Image (cartoon, rainbow, N blue to C red; front, top):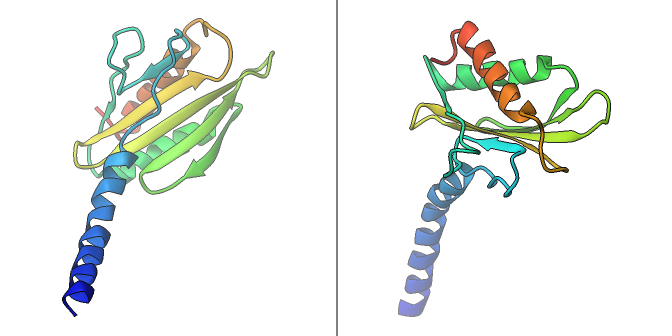
Length: 146
């Protein structure tokens, strides 16, 4: 009987700790590769770093505004979207290169973490940084972020 009770308590503890672990993992963006064709609000170095979006108002509304802004960008398709995370693909006009955009809502910190990166090549000539800054401007004009 004590072994059964110990197993049950252990199972309950593991189950209760899972959402916290999943939440911690969910607020991490993929790392930028060692190439200048990526920007991330979680990058440790200045070359790749870009400031996260500081939310004004309700976090859910800001994240909805980001989804809307991304869906309105030309040649950009949201491929995965949840309440707190999304992935989009942006395709270049001429060569059809695909860039990945990841965003994570960190409501507790009041920010949206953002990353934009080219899948191939070395340099993007600043395209990913300009994309994120254009999103920032759009969201600021909508009153969703500072």
